[in-house]
Image 1: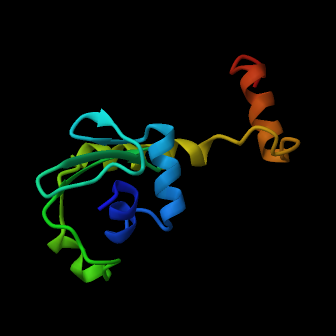
Image 2: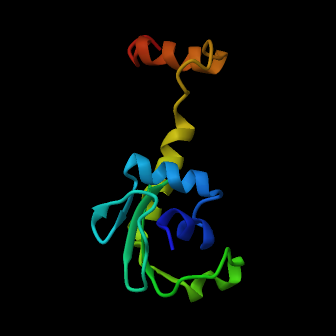
Length: 125
């Protein structure tokens, strides 16, 4: 089975087109080498791919006949992704909520007061 179709069948990508694009960009590796979307996957292969800033590692157990339900995915793969990869995304969530995004607009009144307090310093209070 093609690697892009396999990723779609075991529900790691939403569409086969997304899987194909990921392969073309070099985000998918089979047994350590970058692959084209048409590369066949066999039981025993290890697939590394990046999705949403997480590096997934999957071991192929069997080839599904077609797209399978979410409950049956574990029959066809073993997810060996380290826990640290998921913890990094949690830290990114917390860091992104504090800072304002670029181009979001003018500072709010609270932002302006915080900036003035910072530039004034503690001496002038």
